[in-house]
Image (cartoon, rainbow, N blue to C red):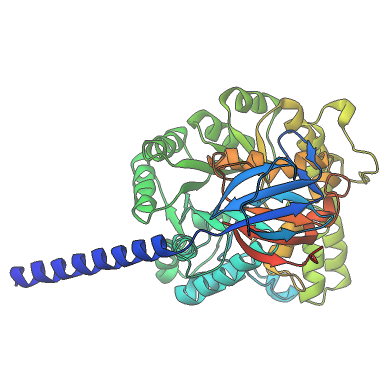
Length: 485
């Protein structure tokens, strides 16, 4: 029997080696495609400089040369893509997304039955359904993100045991079309039944939750959770920190992740959770609603990133409710009040981050948005490194996932952030936070040929980001709605 096992193992190894060899030969035999992209304007988010006119020489999946037409020598017979009066930007980065969840908000009566009624029923349905079905849905949502200009996604949980890892690998292998993905596998948390799902049948709860979360109750279990996610080949560790965490547990998770050269993204909303994440050396604070000025100073000194997630800013959820369910007058009044509270909270954050003299860009609508603007402005004023993620994991009627995701970033401008900083938050800044600044986030020689184009000037009108008309990833054109000139 042992000999039979050895022969089977050898056969499998030979099969894998042969497949790898065929794949390598196929890749080597594919001709390198060279093309020249022309546009009236090219924006460098890092400096804010605009090159006009501009050309980008692409060779294979990389950018070879960038400059004015007079200085870039294109090979004879090269394919030319003329984007006319468009503005070229680096491929956009969504640093906080949930590609394998897309819950539909429940009816009002059903919502009233649940403590966390807007999210829990839909999330629960996705956890208990077929992982294969969920992965196929994720493939669709990933493609929709890419078609809207998001060429890189950091997926932070709600993906089953390895759904985002499998999706990443399928895209990288060319079996699916989608953005490049950094996968986190399951969220690490102390008690999933506290913040996500409540009052489950105790006979089923553990089995269900294990498909979505890695729960811990000690520093040793925190280390083990990192190792379990590492077994599936994740790129980043996501931790959902609440006040029930201990500093020792958080430190153990970060230490184990850093030993494996994995960054740690920390869901932290309250002051205590934020402090534990900072002290432990987490790489980014996600959400950070209650961050203090002293904590921002600590983050600045340690190089910790603040990742804005303006998902619910403005009337986002009210629009979803209107598109899915019929609201009672009472619920509509509650929704409008919630919209206003969210605006105030987020505007307060932004205002606390910006310099006082640059608090609001000309023409910004800041009515009722003070709280969140204060948050954003404090972060910017503190000079903390920052990026932005959509935190999108909702079904939005009438929009693709990409359209819903891109609708979140212009709201940062409404909350007081300068348009160029908004663009940086989803290009150069995000690339650095991910640790991929050597390959994405800018249109520079040697980086991946990830490009998007909009018809106008996104610095003058940040909503141009919601109307991306050309998308290229890895030197392959995904979308081109611009007429050749």
